[in-house]
Image (cartoon, rainbow, N blue to C red; front, top):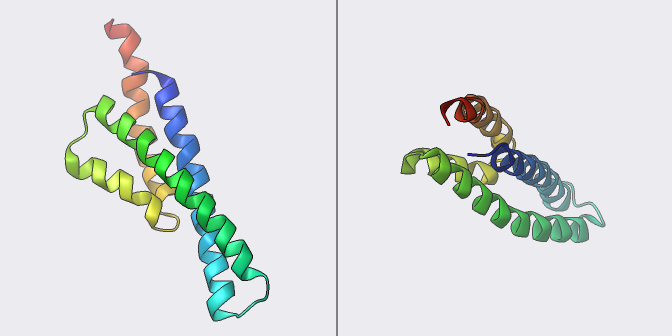
Length: 109
């Protein structure tokens, strides 16, 4: 497995996580605080998060299949992009697990 697979996953994890936090803040502003202008913001961020989450799913699935994760772990990583802030914790754990595998690969070849 190449380092670029992990890097792409990490980038999309952070992007997805930040957009989900912004979306959550927008929904709170729109419905709980009844702020004007929050509807447009929530719509724009929601669309961006939705499309970028699909890319996150593809990249996380790619990483999981190359790392030969079991289905349960793969599902856990895939669903992390739907819970605000969860993706940051999952990304950190995944990175710590995968980085040694990537570093050891050239030595095994």
